Image (tube, rainbow, N blue to C red; front, top):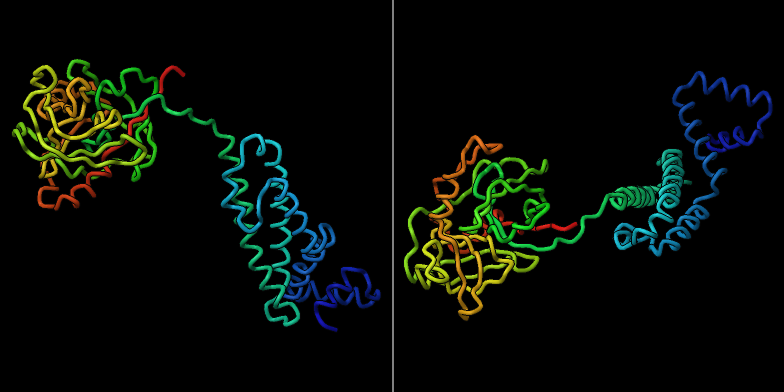
Length: 360
């Protein structure tokens, strides 16, 4: 009698009393035989309780259809389900997926690869196990995500840039002046919680510190803050977030003073938008030469940037013992020998969108 047929006859209680006793004795004496028998019993119990694979698949498909999902593209479209639908169907879908996964895995281990009669079933089940595992895990993951409190859209955003390896970020004071909470974000680091450390409304300079556990201290930043002033007509460029992606702009120093002859600022011939405020102005060697701080609408095409020497003075004025962690600037500019494009590729990882939340 073939082994699988014997397993099924024993499970269905179709063996004679003598054959049943002999079967049970063999299970005790032959450990390998006993494990094969137990695996097959698990398969048969699963099929008896939940029906054959076709009925289980149809049941799962029905639940997926109620959720407006396709079983083939389930992990992709699941992100589009709204919260109310998850509240209604989330747990049901998770339980259904768990049942289907357990049953299929039981079948997967119950069938033997060297059994020619079941090879096709084995291969099909192996594919179905992988699909169901992905579907099941995605359901649970999305239920967890939907249970997290959503963060409201930011009220305002600007730009900032990292100046130290341990998370200090410079931006414009007017960007963050009404903030109840602050986040910084870019493609490399994602979204990080930040805290206001220092501000000076008169010079429009503010200093933030990343306080998010996801952020790990870097070995260094590759650029320096320039001590000397830029020259009239000197070429400069900017990186910032006037929209939800980093934007490059270039031009020249068009005046050695800013709006109303402010000696702390430059006038520049670079087209900027409000979202650029707080972003770096960079010289041709890749060093910081200023901080973008505004557009003067009365002077057509004129934009302004706080001078880097002002930023250095502000940093120097902060008592180190008042800071949670020491602020150390990079004195060596590692970008000087790079091409313009090469500098930008390095720089963009250190420029952040600053998202401001207030009045919540």
